[in-house]
Image (cartoon, rainbow, N blue to C red):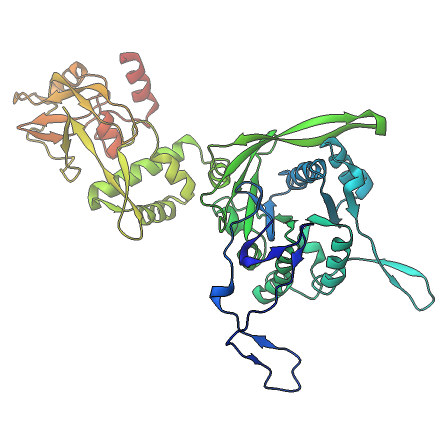
Length: 483
């Protein structure tokens, strides 16, 4: 077995401490009061090795891996499933816990997952008082890291679960201080390397679904900077299925996501009627970040409609614009969420097209119309018309409704040049199709300026596109009856 940094291991899998290759390189200890020795090693004496994956592209040996997620996402239950698999492979597992009761919560999960309990070890720490009695205390890292590693080596244990990792942090160290967090995690990371061990440190995510999972871990950013692997969990409330994603990917060639499902089983021989276990369902086609965003509470349909109108009107006026700018302005003006704006432009009739370009890559939004297979510039004045009166319908054109939307045949008005009096305005409108999307005259593209059903002006871009007031119940009902 091998891990990064060119370490070597004996026939039993334990690391062999290499002798420093110092040929031609001095050892320096200038200050006699300083017991530390600085030794320089040539890069030519370090052997590069590949990552030793315990679970391919998810869990490496020799590194600290952080399973993170909100409460009830199934982090410890999934770790119990992995630990059970480790015991089935003949490995010894050390489960270091503080939050959950060993007999009531942890052991049933391990039994339900099929663990060989003889290979599962729990640690208790006590302090001897002056009168000789023992008082229970907790493991504190990095203070106890040497004692912990010594015990792991004696048990031939190279699979360790910290449940939860923050519970073993010194009380005086702040979870929000980068220096404190780094001082806490780095010794654990080095221990994992020395033992070539799987080390899982369970941590918690905040509730902000707008942020990426890696950035939503509670506390300083060092909680995800120091570990070599971060596995994010997501499961919607009330759902049995969830997804796990590698959200850091320092070691894997490409991020991997897998699905998991909760099952309820009975352990009748132990008098337990119900306990949950996790079953892994294979690679997933959705990431945790995508699942978190899609599960965010969204505004109602009217809010999305208003956001789409705003975005289309903005792009009509300003042309192609940085998507982040448009989203920010729209969310601010309408007092809505960025997520609502993103969902608004994905509806079936949206004309907003997103395109990534530049370096670094940025998304830009623009409007795109296609009439009879020809691209019509979105810069054309939508309110321009050569006639003050509606135009009668003469032909049908194919209009694209967005980059990812299929094309559909819709009727379009073609100007005839005939004038109509205000007395027969409604008659002329009534002869138009139910949803005139574009008016074509002299090779130019225009949109209706009045509603097909009530004759009132169309103020918003999507209303002009559809030819009627999509937010007016009477016009919507008339459109349905006409269809």
